[in-house]
Length: 69
Image (tube, one colour):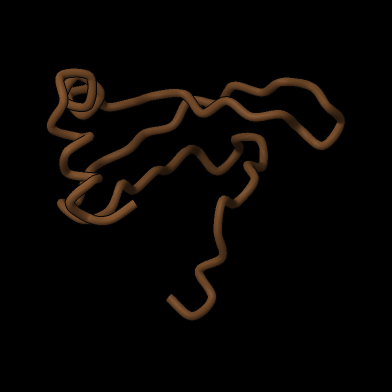
């Protein structure tokens, strides 16, 4: 997505509702094929959505590598 597309999505009513919350849930399928649902805290910095969870949360798949960023 381009930065202007991200802003457009976040300005929609559902985007505003999500940004007004302080937590959400990340759902994914574990390596063993079982579904997982993990509470995630997040914030919008104006250019990035930053997501974090507790140190003892189940390991989450990384959607991208930070190498070189």
